[in-house]
Image (tube, rainbow, N blue to C red; front, side, top):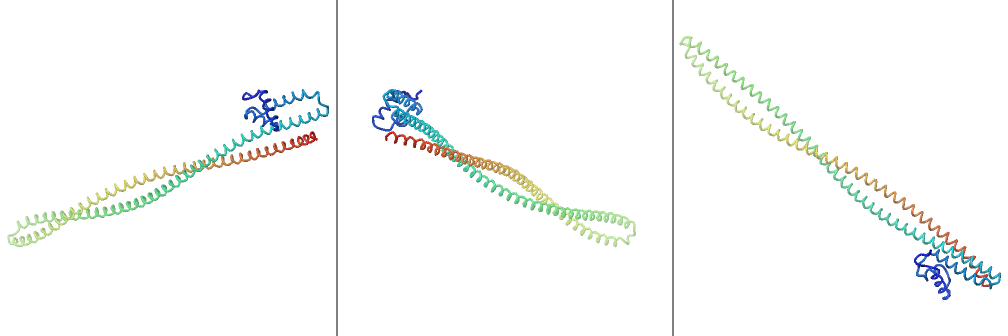
Length: 332
């Protein structure tokens, strides 16, 4: 069946119009006359039926030699038309394949550009992540240095506190010794006074003199004791201050330790993001490589189609040569 409303009557009308203008009758000319509609195979079949009908009417009046010449010419025309129809179909097929290939190439090119853009963006993200990682490493090194300094300062503070504790213990021992000596002295003086009271009154003056001497010694001892108490209070105040400083240093050390832990966690997150970005970039590179291979395969297919077109053109030329010879012989 004809497509698009094409029938034998329309083909006959178009054929008569072409012959009336003295133009070369062909499938393409009839299709153009029909408004570029209809299948070339259907047009070729209708033309063949019309030509066979005309030959049937004229065959009884022609000599045998002319009938044979006409038959040869008809066969040549039929071969030419079939070849033209086949070549036209091949050309249409090649054109469709060429358009499909061009579309595929454009899509592949756009995909490659998109992947290159994504790869560039990922490379920039990777560089940013590496810079952030480097900064985190520097911060971690600084935190470690600060932590070491604080540990050393804490160690020094502990040494000073131990030294102060030793001094306090030494002063407390001296103070206790002074108290013991004073108590011993008081006890001895009491015993001595009791003994002297029982002694002869002649020794009263001597005892009073010794008592004054002892009182002077006691005043000196009391002054020493007062000074020791003051030193003890001052050392206790310094010890409390050092304890406060140590507590502040410990809090600062805890804060620095927490900051170092946070920096380590952030560094671990950046390293995981870095690994994910590197894996994504590797995947995109593989996709780009696969698209390049597909493009190469499509280029080979296009080259094969071009070779097929050249072969079809050569076959058409070979078919056209006998036809030209037949036309020359007939005109002779």
